[in-house]
Structure formats: C-alpha cells, structure tokens
Amino acid sequence: MAKQARAVQTWRSIVDAAASVFDDYGYERAAISEILRRAKVTKGALYFHFASKEAIAQAIMDEQTSTVDFAQEGSPLQSLVDGGQQFAFALRHNSMARAGTRLSIEGVFLGGPHPWGDWIDATARMLELGKERGEVLPHVDPMISAKVIVASFTGIQLISEADSGRADLREQVAEMWRHILPSIANPGVIAHIKPEGRVDLAAQAREKAEQAEREAREIAAAAEAARGAAAAGRNSGGAHRG
Image 1 (cartoon, rainbow, N blue to C red):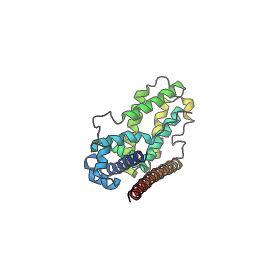
Image 2: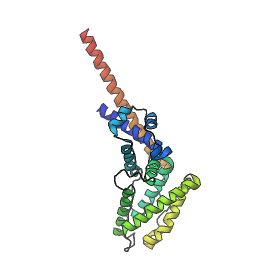
Image 3: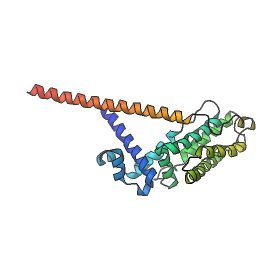
Image 4: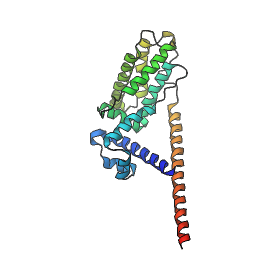
C-alpha cells in the first residue's frame, strides 16, 4: 500500500513539475532535465511512469479538464457559465490549466484525440441538458454552439493574456456570455443567469488546495510509516542473527 502511495505521489510530482515547465517554455523548448529538477525525481522514476515527453504532455492535456466541474443540478446554462469562469480562474492560478491550453494551442496533439474535443463534448452535453429543461432554444444545435463557445473562449483568453496577463479574463468571459446567451437561451432564462459566475472561486481554490495538502500529508505519513516498519524489521532480523 505504501509503495502504491509513493508511486502515486511520484506520478503527481512529475505531472505537476512538467506542467510548470510546459507553461514556461512550451512543448519544443521543455527539457526533461528541467522536469526532473523541478519534480525532484530520478530519470529512472520518470521513465517508469512515462515513456516519453510526449506521454507526459498527453497526461497534462488529459488532466486540464479536471479543473472544471459542471454541476448537473440546477440550471444547465448557469452551470456552463460557472464552468467557464472556473477555467478562467484556473488559467490565472493553475499551471496545469495553462500548460494544457498552451500545448493545445501549439498543436501538440500527439496522435491522440483533438485537445479541444473534451471541452466541446462537455459543453454540448450541458446545452443538450439545457434543451431538455427548456433553457436552450429548440432550434439550437448543441454541437455547433459548443464549438462556437469553445472557440470564443479560446480567442478571448489569448487576447486577455496579451492585454493584461489574464487579469481581466473573468470580465471578458462574462462579456462573451452576454453576447452569446441571447442567441441560444430562452429569453425568460437570461435574466437569471450570472455571466460572472455564481461561485466564490477564490474560496473554492483554497478548499481544493487544503484538500490536496491533506492528501499529500497522508501519503507522506504512510510512506514514513512504511520506512519505519521496514527499518524495524531489519533491526529485528539483525538482533536475532546476533
């Protein structure tokens, strides 16, 4: 169990370190040596988990969608807006989100599915749910609208990054929704949607960080206990031989 916990911790360290390197340098200029330095792991440990730099980049692109949680209860459109604002927040505070976005924009598809596919599919599902609940207009094609929304968000965050280092991204995303909602939403619903999102993202981020810290402490404690048990076993064996 402790060995498994250490493996999970090592995998996490590598992916987090790689995300910061890809965020800083992009795919082509990212060096394995720098990932090793930031992760504080050996080359053998890295290649035990990942066959190549490409495999690490794919893991990051897979991970970035975990920064958003589309709530299924309540208003689907508000949940969609909240998800967009969650990701806007993550782009400012989470290197995983930034790295995954940078890799996607750079065209690092690595032979896998198109990196925007998960975002488009998730958005289309929420729009379909919105149609079922009468929030989205009957003529709206969820997949077409999802592609427009994801493309709009991508362009807006790039411009916000250039203009302000994404400091104004939340308001820019809210403005995007103010323009898009009238073309897809039932007019009676729009007045109840908060384009800036309804979640206290800073508090949510603190809660997630605290949870991650607790989990890291538990993993470290389990590893330390395992080392202590192993040392006790060795000492006991030596005493019996003596």
